[in-house]
Image (cartoon, rainbow, N blue to C red; front, side, top):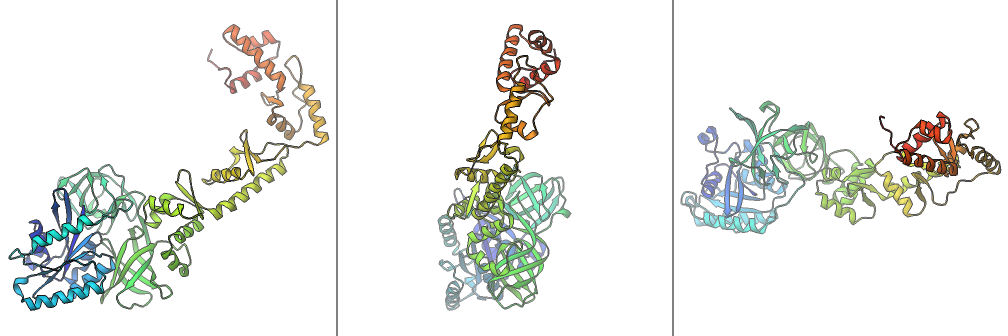
Length: 582
């Protein structure tokens, strides 16, 4: 669903125009009815075509309620800017235009209202002023419409242009559905309800949602859009969420409700900023994003369009969110949130704004390895966009089925360190096969590092050990002599080799790893040929007796209990035989 927002000076006919389009009166407060102006946002569902709808947000024009205008405009695809023919362009008209520009909204339809109260000459002058505005504000060109809500003239033409604009435009999809809370209230027998305009992606009553700042899991009773119960709600819709686990005092205007793991929160934001007027560093500002309003201080960085804003309280947002900031004199500027942490030198920020690859590089310098989902949050982009960025740059490598990213530079450094670790292991343990895989730490990138070195044929994995490709355990003459004597000693016919004449531990491990001997217990080792022969004899006993136990082995082979138990434990470990309760 697309979202349309009205804008313009107080009493220029915005609410009446919405009523002419939709048949709905968006003035919902008694105070609004009395004063004849919109204080809060008003909403209406507008059917553009048979299966095409839009949300219309009627924003207030009075200067005291500019926050609500900003709250309405942050989620829109198209603005209808209303100018009364009998008054022309007024202060709030300009401020609304400034806000539209700062929020990067290009598609604006200009409507001259109350034409029944003006002359053709006055209307012609207003049109000339509007054409200058379109040029100065770099807005898309649309036909300037003349409308009388009282006489109901020009409304059909407006409907036609809205339809043409909507059907020819593409709804931008952002990762994660969310909305900025603009109303919180409670209904008897129903409970807490929060409302807002959904942006990003669809949400459903099965979505895993959270409320931020101070991330808290949300339990949904019911979802509605324009008083209709729905299981799935599309972006651009007015959403009402009936919340099960929070009261109205635990949710406030400006909070964000959205899908988990997409939304950031911080007191510190770095922004790309456009200024309407000069402002001194460390000036106090009122910072608006979504429907939130927060006091903060701004510092412009090195006379660039980059600024650091430190806020008095934590806000929730995604990277790329638009904002406005004001002071006592009105709207000062606005722009886009680009970072939320001090992860790089401020002098480097401008290049990071220009170059998306630079942003990824900064995050990898900080985290070394980072998940794609974290980059989605930190860059404010969809996963597919990030993967395309990675594919187009050899400096980054995605791994674990495109779940994580590592820099090529860091991978090379870590590969060198790991190769050195393997070399040192060989040096300190010259008779062992290599570094046991089970001893290697479980860092996500370790598997990638090992595979990289294996592709370069610098290491290999053999029998669960990491070793250099050309590694061969080397024995000196003394060790060879010891081994030959030991093998002759344990190569006995009665299957009961001596258990108290073992070699030093490194030589014993070497013989086991080289499969020259088999370890059956702490002290019982067999020469490999003897072990194979003994194993076959026990399996034959098992076949004849349909079972095997210590007594059968002792009876048939004349071995003591110690050796019988050792060999049976070994065969059970190899899953050649199974232990039973009997």
